[in-house]
Image (cartoon, rainbow, N blue to C red; front, top):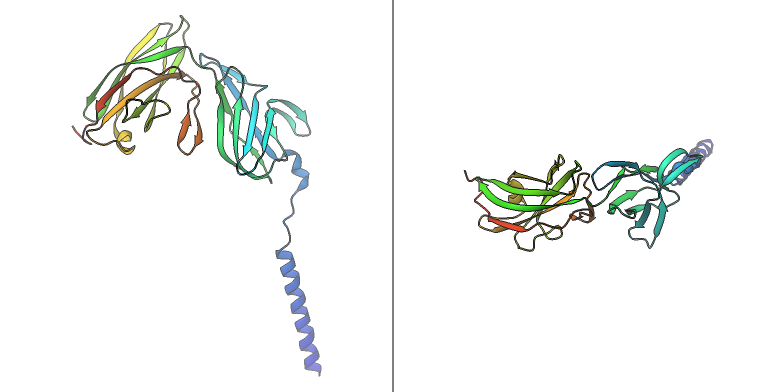
Length: 268
């Protein structure tokens, strides 16, 4: 009888420990509510004028947030905050659910910017990288000639500036196998950097571009390749609206189109 009683007590203790452990493992994790005031999305927006000159942090910028898969639209504006969060100049969203976000950055007179499919966890603060808004620049670009030196493409172009002010313009080159190549219809886009006007009305130079990336984009030997160029703000902005689909909000009107025949790979 003594051994039976001892056995029953041991079983009861084991069951008690097992039940306690199971309950503990299935308990909802506790969230530190003392930090609720800082949870959410935080960001800043800097601006650039039509000459690519910085304007500093922008206020009164509209922030439009869409949560993917949820019929939710949230809007706010940038401003200056001085409350329990401390001092903050920018924008913030709190109390919003977790998920994948598309965030549009809008201000009258500036090209739009956007963050595509940013994941947000409602349990923490998420400070986004500073976003940029720029104005459409003053100027244009024309293609003068295209030649090949082995597997190097020589693109001669002229950038036209407006006025006598010294400022810089960036240049985009878009490539496709059809003559209607554009910023919206291309298999490859190339940013060649920026050029300063130095107070002159134009600048002509030849860009040398290896063909490696064109081969990688699927263009083959013997195909006709068409090229169109666009001028952009020195502080250029582009954003994604779908997987590998890009928008260039501040480019000027496109140039004329030139074409060349794709040479064999690694031709001397």
